[in-house]
Image 1 (cartoon, rainbow, N blue to C red):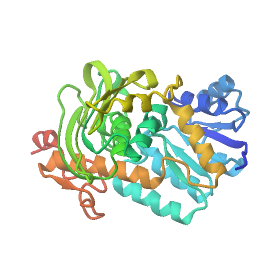
Image 2 (tube, rainbow, N blue to C red):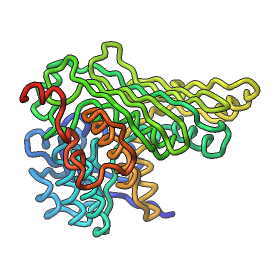
Image 3 (tube, one colour):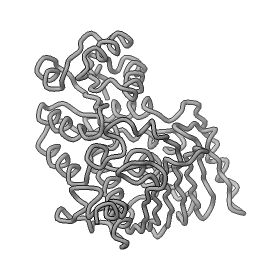
Image 4 (cartoon, rainbow, N blue to C red):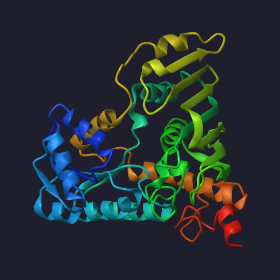
Length: 366
């Protein structure tokens, strides 16, 4: 496997762009920052100065016309993710898209089809899949060392005040696509799905409890997986004691992680079932001090590209997670249990995550 040096461009130079710049510059010479793009050229120039980026552009169109780049990191508000990713695919340039990758399942399917016609790829930034603990958990579970998965709990309980939602696109269906289910909890339940595999059914509720937004600020789901395992998923932006927690109960051990925005091995614990104390020794054979984050994800992207493979998280991976989001909202707003595969292109929750409408909107506009 030969290594290349990939030319990267960052589109959107707001807060999350720093994590991408740090990942690229920390790649050990495997990639470099060739350009920065922002509709606010002054902001782009300031960002370029900080990271020693040679060129700036006011639009992705300008970038693709004037530069030869291998990778475009899309760090814009969510409503721009799909159209910019499509533009990249049409130009034969791989797009690395911040979460959520699209505003809807229908938009996700458009990306799937566009990728099939392109020589390039789209990958979603869901970096918690790539921390050492998550990789080890999937390996041990896949090898049968933990026994059957029985039960899991997944909680993203964060706090975002009213000032956070003063940004015009936040808390809206049209520009953000959803509330904490789409923009916050997606990190944890995507990791849950990557560990437990295909889900089969979702029963959910969503509520607007404290924030003056169009979307929910809390959601909860009961999930059944094809394996028979069951899980709870909680997503919140109204929780003063913030935490991100995942717990997996297997036949032979409980495996847990608690962190906030990124974990190391020190955040994981393993509790063996009686008679299976060897699981702890298996877990402790390795130890990593590097936190989960964009660096580990980007290294995995480069590894895949060096092998001429689609980078993780692929459009297929991301679609499974986005289908789960759509099913959660559909269940919450219709009161029905939703099965995997039920949200077909003609389903009301395919083009919009609020589908047939939210209970609070119906009260406002009876």
